Length: 270
Image (cartoon, rainbow, N blue to C red; front, side, top):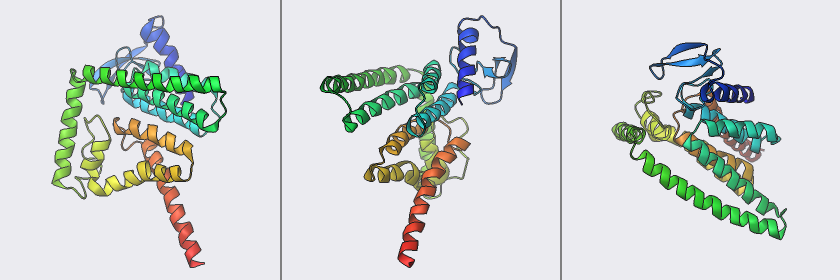
């Protein structure tokens, strides 16, 4: 993902923004139903003035970038250059979801420093001030974005998609209408889970994305709590329900829960 991010930033700056490097050809996208320029088939200008990388739309690219950033921050060595590249790519995708994910990550980082008690009194005061500032920014940006999107076609489309998904869910509450039946044209994953799989599929996702992080909170394993909190927010409003990354992020908590159940069962049998 680091290579994709670096390449996309290069061609976004010198191709899309500055027009120094001309695009090499124009291709047709089955996803968008339109033609758009590409640079050597390694960077695609799928949406005007948005860094889409190799993806058909910026929200998909942003989702992958957020997962990569969360993995680097919570699971790996927190290489600052990798984090800078991922953050820059997220910002150039101009995704509102990405901005909120970044603000959430900054807030979690500040809270973790306070919890560790590694800050001096002055730094603690500045950190608390930063939390207040971030909170105000989130409220301001959130309100501004809501007002702006409520007047756009994108907001209207999301509202229509949600209504359709809830209508399908009401027709078959327990089992839904079937795996992968309602994702085409939708703009979020959360309500598609209800429409496709009903309560049954929702339980699987709920156990993985909500119950398992709650168990980690009880164990004071805060890195997974923060990681899956931001991931759940990003996942919920992006249509990435059945992608490989999404299924992996679902499978890891479920496999962990199964291991715990088997371990307890072996103890009882012993």
